Structure formats: structure tokens, C-alpha cells
Length: 265
Length: 88
Ligand SMILES: Nc1ncnc2c1ncn2[C@@H]1O[C@H](COP(=O)(O)OP(=O)(O)O)[C@@H](O)[C@H]1O
Ligand SMILES: [Mg+2]
Image (cartoon, rainbow over all chains, first blue to last red):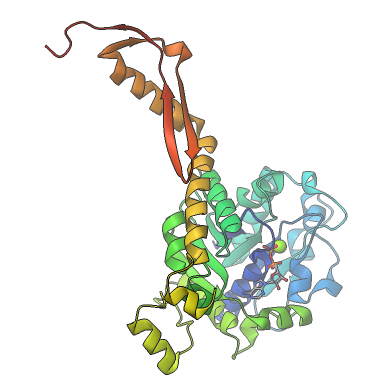
């Protein structure tokens, strides 16, 4: 029996889909059987981020409505052994699926996969309810911004009475230099506000944009910092102790000076 | 903000502003999302106050109000009567 994770955030555009694609791919690269489930019905994205958009035949709604079996809707990623995608339907809306059906699909998948990772839509309405229904663990993604942290707090509040509490926290699009200058909330600000364990900190990285353009997750790139941060998260999920990555570039003499006179925090 | 501004302490770093705004907004959000918390708080206040003062529970209000940059718990508790000799 595998484990079912949901990746959620409240706010849109903070990096849920990117996180699902990269953590999932990294887990498969470590030898696991992984199913990625796009629960964002009507606004499917995960297929494009994974570069699998041309291979869709059936989708989640087809499975739920009994048109096909789960295994027939799964798209096999040819780049990594053991990686599969269950795409969302594009021409339907959230109401095409209910939480009980979603739970059933996740249960079926967890029979055959080590990890099932559900990509949650933005918001806290039915799409969110569906996405979390079959999950056993949750990852909340936020960026170091007031609005994103606020929405994350709201989602955490909704998870509190469920089996998904406490979720793990992923801080995405982190800019170490800005944080150092005092112009961005830093890791400990976000962590202490939300009071969750940090599963990983992903730097803001152009490689995410470039790899997403090409439809290949950044974890394939050895020289991408974000890719490495996602690979580290996969290793932590697998139970390894991996310290948070050093994100700050070594800052030379000026930095040393600033630190001595207390100008950088 | 430039290096020199910060050197002479002219401006608050924007993250401090963000932290403060976040703190205030979360106090309200968390209280609003959890009416049961506010209700429990209200009930306990009544229990305590009632030991000394007879209050009109039904007209009592307990709210969070933002005043300048701080949030206050503002309770309005109409008094019916003061119990005699409680502290004697
Ligand atoms: N660490 C990052 N660095 C740079 N760009 C990022 C990063 N994470 C996400 N993005 C970009 O932000 C946008 C939103 O990401 P996405 O994963 O689709 O968010 P969500 O699924 O939460 O709506 C995308 O264009 C993505 O490429
Ligand atoms: Mg998305």
C-alpha cells in the first residue's frame, strides 16, 4: 500500500503543480512507483508541466464515470521508470467529481503505487474538498508573501480537524538575497507564523520557467538549484535526513563587512 | 531602499512591514474562521465576571478591533448589579 499525498496552498500560482511534477519525478528517479493525479478539473496543467499533454486518451472524470479503468487512463512517462500521470478532464468542472469518488480512485491507485500525489486546484471550495478526500498526508506550498502565507494559514485551519494535520510546509520562490536584505519574509518568519515543519525551501529559479517551457521537470537538470531542492524533498519524504540546502551565495568581503557592522539580517 | 538609507536607519525593511501586516491579518482571520473559539472565550469571560458583577449576558459583545497597529479584544458587558461584599 502506497502513500497518498495532496499538494495544496489556497492561493493560486504559488507552485503546487510545479511541486507535484518535480517531487513526483524525483521520487520515481529514486526507484519508486509514482502516480501523479491532476485534480484541477477544467483547468488541467500538470500534463503540460510534465510534457505529457499529447498522450492523453482518458482522464479522471472518465474513470470516475466508469468509462474506463484507472490503469487505462494512466499515462506512462517514458523518461523515468515507474512514473505515471492521471490527467484531469479539461471540458468538465469540479462538480463532475465528488470526494467519495476521489477517495475511491486514490485507494485504487495506492494498491499499485508507492506514492500517489494529488495536485490540488486553488481555492478552498469543492475542488479542494475533492483533492484532499483521498489523501493521507498533505504538503502546503506557499511563497514568502503576505497574501500567500495568509491563504496557507486558512488552508491549514481547514486541515486542522482532519487526518491531514499537521501538513508539511514547502516555501517556494525564495530569494535569499532579498531575505538577507530584509525585503522578503525569511524561512523562519514563514515557518514560525504557520507553525509547521519545513519540508523544503525552493529558490526562485529561472530553470523552472525554462524546464516548464520544455515540459521536463527541473529535477532532471543537475545544475538547477530548484531541481536540487526538489530532489532533496524527495529524499526527505523517503526518510533520509537531508539538511536544508545552502541557498545563499558566498558573499565575499563586502558581505562579511556588512554582517560585522550588523547591516544584513 | 539603498544601502545608505539603511545605514542611517531611515526606513523599516519591508519584511518587517510584511510581518506586522501578516500578524494583524491572521489574528482576525483565525478568530473569524473559528467562531467556536470566540464563543468559548465569551462564555468563560461571563463565568469569571459573574462572580463579582451581575451582567446582562445577552447584550454582551466580544470583538477583535484593530486600533492603529494593534489588535484589541474589546468586550462590552452591560452591568445589572454589583454583588455586595465579594471581596470582604
Ligand atoms: N521556484 C520557482 N522559480 C521560478 N518560477 C516558478 C517557481 N515555482 C513556480 N514557478 C512559476 O510560477 C508559475 C505558477 O506555478 P504553478 O506550479 O503552476 O502554480 P500553481 O499550481 O500553484 O498554480 C509557473 O509559471 C511556474 O513556472
Ligand atoms: Mg496548478
